[in-house]
Length: 428
Image (tube, rainbow, N blue to C red; front, side, top):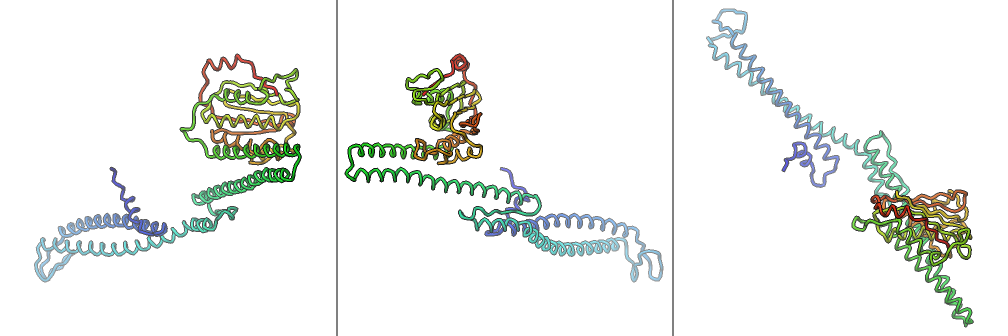
């Protein structure tokens, strides 16, 4: 086990109970100064003591001993005759006294400067941490109703300003999520209230001594509203599950081209109907043309099937009489569904991916629940993919492209079969 460094031990020792970061910074600052000052003091004293002793011995070896009454040009020792050993003792005492004085004054200066270092560290930490205190006070005032406020950091482009800008970006995402959640709850309440009001009106009509024809219409109305409520609740459950994301154990290799063919075959047009000369099904329904290449992705097969089903349902439902739906899948995981529906403006496309948002002219009581493309986007994001949409080539309809990460190259046999097979055309 590695032993912590001295600096790390000093930092750990500064973590007093209930101490603030400012206090710890000041203590660390003073502690580092004390350690370095002590090392400097020891070095200076050892060097000066060694130099003083050398100089004192040099003086002692060259000192002259004079008899009383004689004058010499050098150190004068009088009163009595002193031998060389006594001179060495004297110079040693002078050296020790000088070293002790230097040590005492150095220690006093070191203690005073350590206190000054702690004070400077305290002041510096306060200046450095002031933006953090400001951000803390603003964060304490935040709530679900004040998410529009921002930290708005000022000052130089340093780490603290970067932290404030990161928190502002986080608040922007939280505000968007809260607004989306509130809109979702309000729209879901409205969508659920509408069929309930219709059912209540139908029941009231059924209780007012209705005719047999009224009873039939009432039962049909109740059944339609019940089915619509069921679709809405199922859509909400799928949306919630897809937004939760996918764990690694929920992913498996899925042949997306098989899923597309299976979901296209489940459309009403696949029930034995064949297209006419112009590719239209009986009753002028849209012709669904499917062209797929072998493609394998990793994900949840049920959710991927729901993604394809929602794309097809949206393209078929919001179409024009005698229109068409083009479905294509490339080997790189790009699924494109385009229809010939009503004209769509560029500014309305982003709203189609919001829950319960419909384009102009789309009936709220229609077959859709307003969750189709929202579920498509959530499922695609859960699989690490993206969804984009653009108006049709001539302004009519919508072209939605889903791009999913490819798992691996399909088997050669499957690729050959896909290339040899003709594009599937399903008409309704």
